[in-house]
Length: 321
Ligand SMILES: Cc1ncc(C[n+]2csc(CCOP(=O)(O)OP(=O)(O)O)c2C)c(N)n1
Ligand SMILES: [Mg+2]
Image 1: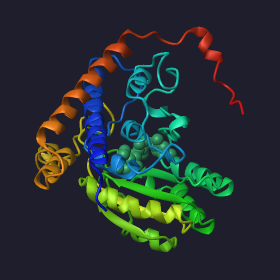
Image 2: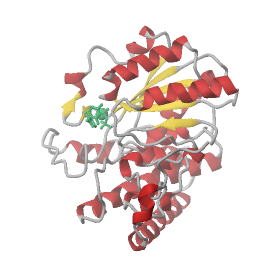
Image 3: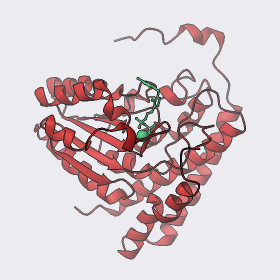
Image 4: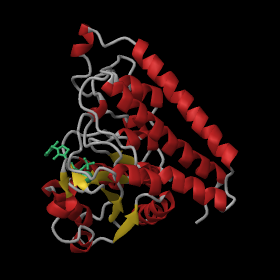
């Protein structure tokens, strides 16, 4: 199905914003300004944005430790996100979550997650809630190739089928779990696991926004129609190390340079939309400039913002209903 001009612009803006965000966090982390652990999503933008483009705030996603891209794709406030990553009081979670626990429930972003394979069970709960309360919402779990081998993921896929949940499992297979290549750690064909759990599964080129979006649209329609869960196995790659500081000695010396030159999802998007006459270069360039300016402002504001106070230590301890 054809996307509107607004949708195409939004998709490109989100992908470019994620890229700018991550490239800048990479620099700021090496400069020592960011506390905690950081895992970057650069290179994988087409997946998060392609999957989330058609969602609304009543739909929820559960992310991974590599969660900044999912947050932006789900509509979280970019400046508040930067503040959170810098650990500041004005941050999205009051500076208490940081990169790996960043969340915004009001946007349906259940959070990044330090537990590999932690998202799929959360999504079963969220999808069961949506189904029981008939909200019309759906729930999507992002997980990596490493997480796809976790028992929690297998149990959740089983439960989602048994309960016929409006859920989608998106395996972002970037070829590595930390430094272990998926060819060493994934038994059999991960896509065929979908069939074993009684749900449709589709393999998707994760460098191609349009391929991801088309596959997601079908799975979303299925979930909304009450037909149960689906699996998307998205093949993509990350541009940075597993975490910031990873020397990446396990990757070929030119692996990332070649990916950037030959498979970049933003470059591919630009080529496709300009060749098809859907968007022109000046409109895309304007988005590039606006995204760069937004991230510049976000960093400046995050740096000058205040840290949480001692009194903030004892707030947000209990949930209120
Ligand atoms: C339950 C659990 N086991 C192990 C870890 C340590 N760990 C953090 S990230 C990671 C690799 C995850 O790989 P993958 O799921 O492919 O995601 P990617 O980092 O490639 O996005 C591991 C083993 C953890 N955080 N939680
Ligand atoms: Mg991986």
